[in-house]
Length: 117
Image (cartoon, rainbow, N blue to C red; front, side, top):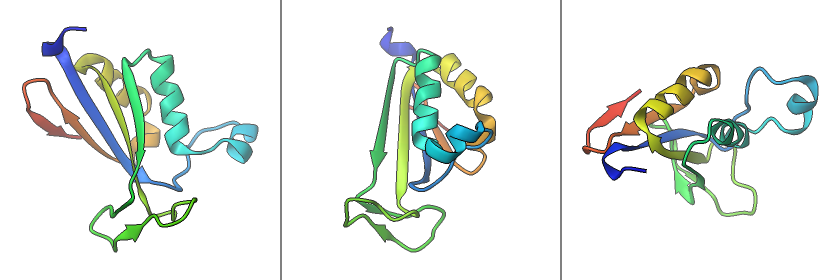
């Protein structure tokens, strides 16, 4: 991959957030938004993907949430970071827009330009 064309998409959402538009079994057993988006990234052959669960933080200027147990609180921030060409990341956003409506997206382009989606 050419370094000049690499972009980073960071998707911020709550730890307990659920994915939308799932079938019955997925909705019952595998409805975690982070895992769902990670699978979608793999299906699209995104070059690199990582899920980061914050030790402490907040979203949308809410109260600080601290992760002090094995299972983080539902308001704890999570970041899914995707690295690939900007065109592929934009395609990912378009294909998953329903599940990204409540998330905060930040796209970092290879020329250090920051676009907030």
